[in-house]
Length: 334
Image 1 (cartoon, rainbow, N blue to C red):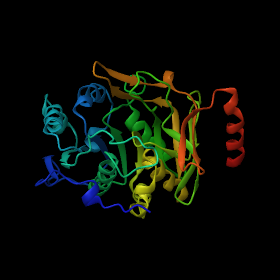
Image 2: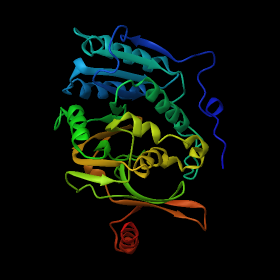
Image 3: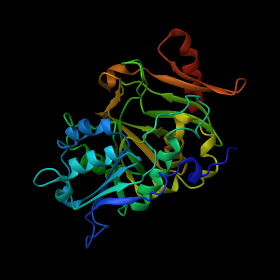
Image 4: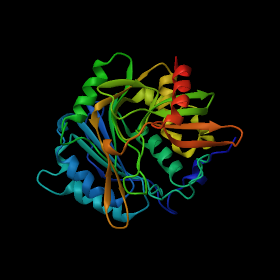
C-alpha cells in the first residue's frame, strides 16, 4: 500500500497559508439556506464559467457562495476577484454570504504522468485536499458543487441549482443528485464517456467501471459519479471520505471521485443521475476552448487486467466484439 502524506504530496506554496480573499460572513446565520461551492484552479475557465453563471436562477438570499481558488497562481485569484466584485450589485453583494478562499496549493497543474494505475502524482492530491477544505467550510446541511471547467445547463435549465436541491429533498434515500457531464480529451472532440458509472469493487479495488449510453432519459440510480455538478447532503459526502487517506494513493488516477462517491452507495445511500440535465465540459488546445457534450459520448468500459496489473481503459461497447463483455458485466450486476 502506497503511503499518502498530504503535507508532502499536496503542499502549499512555500511561505503561504490558506486565506479568505473575500469574506462577508460576519454577523450572518451560517446554518441558513444552502452552500454553493465553486472550485477553481485554472484562469482560462473563468470567462466562460461566469458567462454561464450569470444566467443561473439561484435563491441568492438564502445561498452561501463559497468560491475556492485551489491554485498558487495570482492570475486566477485576480480574475475571480474581478468577477465577484464587478457590477452593481456585484455577485459578492447579491449573495447572502460570499467567500473567496485561496488555498495556495498547486491544484492547477497538469498530470505529471498518464500511467493509469497511479494516483499519487500530479494535481489529484491537491483536488482531494480541497474537498476536505470545503467540507470544513460548508456550514449548511446541503450544498451544490460546481467545477470551473463545467458549464451547467444554463440555457435549457437555468434553475438547475434549485432544481437539483429540490429533487434531492424529494427523492427518498438520495444523498447525491447529479447532472450529466462527459469526459474530455486533448484530441479535439474525440469519443469520450459519461461522468456517471456502474461498477464492481472488491475491497477498495475497482474491478470494472461501466459508463452507460448518453441516450438514457430522466433520473437513474447509479453506482458512482464525478465531482462536477451535483446537489448533496454534507454528512453522507463527508462520511464517504472516512478512512480514504489509508488507501487513496492506490486508486487509479481516473477513479478518485468514483471511489469516493461509490463509498456513499456502499454506506447505504443512493446517487441519482438526471439525464435531463446536460452540462458542457471544457478543455482547451493552444488555439481554442472546446466544449464536450452528448454528441461525443460512447458507452465505455474500464477493466482491471490482473495478469498485467493494469487497466484496459475506455473500451468502447459499440462494436460486435465488445457485446460479450457487456453481457457478462450485466449478468454480474444482477
